[in-house]
Each structure stands twice: as structure tokens, then as C-alpha cells.
Image (tube, rainbow, N blue to C red; front, side, top):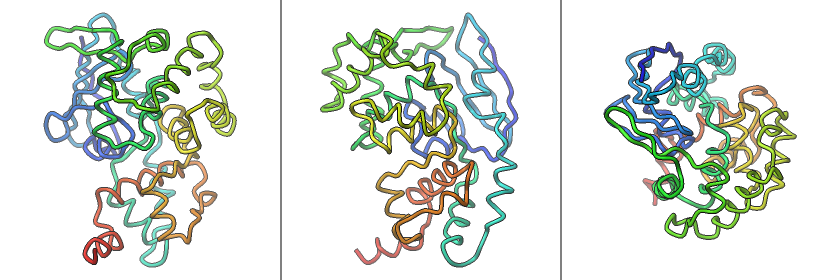
Length: 286
């Protein structure tokens, strides 16, 4: 078990936790979380631009795992310079300016691929509390139990374990056969996670959409949150409403080539957690 200190930029644990991309974080205090990811687990505290990562993995030190997970090496300062080129006080760009300012601190995590695929399959037509409960139940049912000096946690189950597990108490509903079928396909080598991790964005998205139970939105979430494709632009109800209201139904993704997915996260966070004038007005008139 070891503690590491990581330097971060444009990073806020609380905003990331509220950005809809991670479902197993457990908030302990302001900017302090217990974070399982794959088979790993750490207590993470943020003070300014510093993260202290208290890794619970007794046998191995995984500083590089957590540095990659938290996107420490991604150039968020550079992306912010690009975003600020289009800052405006009126028109559609004014909305993005407000969203970016409200969401400063949201980064795109680099999450374990298999956990991300299953988690976003669970997320379809679902809400975050239920998603969290289902994923916790899946891990408790067939994930590996790990222990450290003062903690225990369940790792995310392997495809082999998930394929043959009884998931009837996980609240998956119609999603269960899709998840179990994919787990069996991965375990048998019919669906190749290694290929997925080396594919370009369009190839990866098409490969994911070939799976029964994965549509365009879920495929884009996986591409963005696990494969590092920041061109991916997942469209859920929150984003569709914002795009229709602010951009006449079509988001100008080409203008933000290379980081449209980050802009999408700013929009999602702002719509759900920010003081959006149009949303506030609609609520007042309801």
C-alpha cells in the first residue's frame, strides 16, 4: 500500500463525480473519495492542484495506473486555451462560454475498458442511483474480493465470471441478457477488447455498435470515457435538449475537432448542475 502525489490542471474531484462518467466513486468529504476502478482501489484527496492517492493495492504500486486514470498527462491547459479562443458574450458561443466556466475542473477520465462497457450498457434508460446499485450488485456477486490493512472492496468482474453469474438481483431488467451475451463473447474471444483499444474512433464506434444492446450513445460514451477518443460526442436527453435549444438541433462538432467530447461533458455538467438561464426560466414557468 502506498500514497502518491499527483499534480493536476483544471481538475475538480467534486465536479468530475457529478459529470456522469463514473459510477463507483464514494464521496467521503469535499474533494475526498474512495475510488474503485477495475481491481484497484484508492482513497483520493484533492488540495488545490494536488491529488494525494492512497492506493489500497497491497502487493503492487500502481501510481502510473492512477495517473493515467485521472488524465494527468493530458494537456488540459492547452485544451482550455483552444476553448477560450471562441469565448463570447452572446449567441450560441455564449452558452458554451458559460458552460465551460461553470464546468472548469471536469476532465475525461481514462477508465478500464471492460468496466466502462458494462457500466454504460447498464446506464441505458436508467438513472444514476439505480446504475450505481446495479454495478455494486454485479461486483458483489462475481467480482474478486480484495482486502487491505483497513479496507475491502470488490473488483470489477472478469468477462468469464460475469458470463456465468446469477445477476437476477442486480436490477438489470432487459439489459441482463445483452450484458451476459457480450461477456460470453469476450470470454470466448469473439469480441476482442485488444482490437477495440487499438482501433481509431470510427472503427471502435462501429465495432461497439455491432454488439446487441449497444447503440450510438453508449458506443460514444465508451469511446470517450475508456478509449480516449475526445472526438466522441454522446447525445443523451440532457445534451439533445441543449443542442436543440442553443444550436438549432445540430452541434458544430467540427469546430471543436479533437475535444468535442470535453465540450459535451461541460454541457452535461452545466445542464444538470449549473445555473442555466433557459432551464431556470422553464422551471419557473412550469
